[in-house]
Length: 285
Image (cartoon, rainbow, N blue to C red; front, side, top):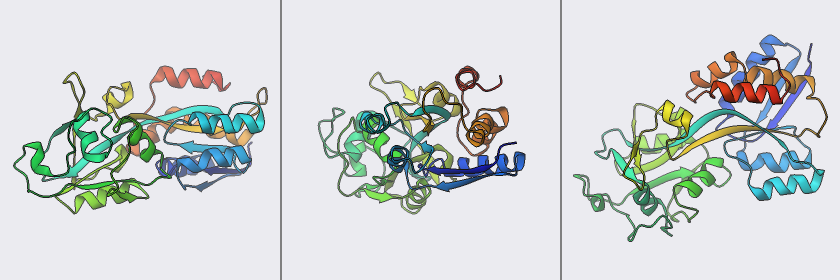
């Protein structure tokens, strides 16, 4: 019977899932407790590298620099486990006339560098040819500590730079709340934070294909801002998973754990991915 405390440091996006999984684990094994510090994905790699945590939830993959810092310190890489799928969804007020945006235009709205190819910046709604208020576009997004901030910059801005007037928020819920209150606003948020007060926008790729942010598009990776959610573990090669971590991963990659993923508004992993990871971790089929 596993006992002990599971300390985790990392993603705000994954905080709700981690807490729910922690409750389910304690119900199954009363001697195990989860302690969560949800200070952003960027906080996970340094904590893992320093050895102050063994579990680091992240809403993006580790960068090469973060990975290399861990390897330099310990001589082996961290263990990466995909636990769910998600997407960054572009949102406007529910009464806004906009329905879709090209990726090039999205970059022209949010970025000052326009690396995705737009010839001119887009700073006002009337530039999009809409029957919309002739007012300046109000930008909302995440802050620097968030994995969402970096992923949106990489995918939507083609590794460009945000406009300096971006309103940065510590969580997706705050982005959604701000967009709900303003017809001039546009922002991006995690799939599980959508509310009736906003409208999600489809994205149009360079070939003119329209991609809606629905669950199947996210599961298969067709939506351009789809992403995987991860748990990184500090586990030396050849060592068995400690009993609390083993019990936690067994739950996360189980039908119950993946049911919780869906219940909280994320997208469950494909069956083949679950089976492969369970086998690699030495968990029962």
